[in-house]
Amino acid sequence: MKRPILIHPDPRLKKVAAPVADLSDDLRVLADDMLETMYDAPGIGLAAPQVGVLDRLIVLDCVKDDAQPPRPLAMFNPEILAASDELNVYEEGCLSIPEQFADVTRPAEVTVRWIDRDGREQQEDMGGLWATCVQHEIDHLEGKLFIDYLKPLKRQLITRKMQKLKREMARG
Ligand code: NI
Image (cartoon, rainbow, N blue to C red):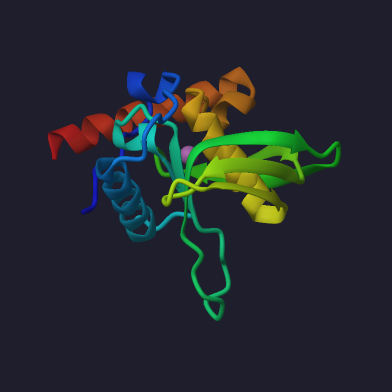
């Protein structure tokens, strides 16, 4: 089932999400719902706070090539264990900040550990778009948005645009 995506500014997007203790069926349903919501948007990543749930869960699928099979990943309690000194710049966007994009610099490669939907611990080295996306989504669990990396003026400009968008959406 698709879930509504919160639009910035929203206090729930600024909160630190809590670690997941037990992998309940409810959490697996949440992961499935988040993947459905992400693919439908369409997007390549989504974090639980973006659907108003303050649990440490992110989903992503950064396979860009339509010829490749999809790779839906649900990560519970994801952690960056190591990050490369080498940096990468990507033009990032966010489903909570629609139609706004800006360059963000992040480590080019990261080692990530997480619990998968079967409760097994997984670890993987990620590069390219996967590295950028997983860092962006884990930031959401810390209440951090990609616009927090931008200069204050640019961030305020985007926030004002989003406030206007939300007023228009509320009016219907
Ligand atoms: Ni985002």
